[in-house]
Amino acid sequence: GKATYAATSGTSNFTISDGDLVIGTSGHGIDFSATSGSGTSELLADYEEGSYTPSVDAWSGETVDFGYYVKVGRLVNVWGGVEDPSSTSSGNAVEISLPFTPSSNTHGMGGAGGFMCENVDFDGSDQMTIYVKPGVAEFRLYHLTDGGWATLNGNHCSTNSLIWYHVTYYV
Image (tube, rainbow, N blue to C red):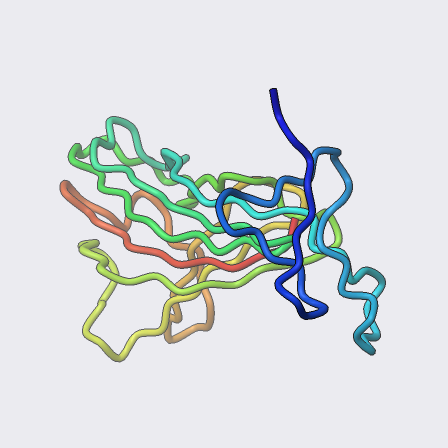
């Protein structure tokens, strides 16, 4: 069976010579309350990393979709790429899915690059941004035009359009 044990190395430190420290009950974690923080919680109760398959609302038939994430507590970092190999893009906003639903009262931002879209001048001087919508598990792409910020939509992109992205947000 399993054994529960504690070991010390002659100091006040807890040492596990082999194996993992397992928190066996949901809602518990590593408590940092001995530090003088000013936040509402000093409990690290979640860590996860993995991959997911993003989807794009404005495209159909995308084939190269990959996404990775690291979630530490409530903070999520996501990066990946999507490619539209067909010419069946719509005029809808380019919205890319996220692996976790953002908090309903916070916003997130990110960066995107690697665009190959025919009707937007991506000559290196253009600015792009990502906006994470609160409470919705997707983000929207925007580009800076002469008239200000505009939503990137499927009509901006042609066959083999590629988008690389990195986003940070809270759940």
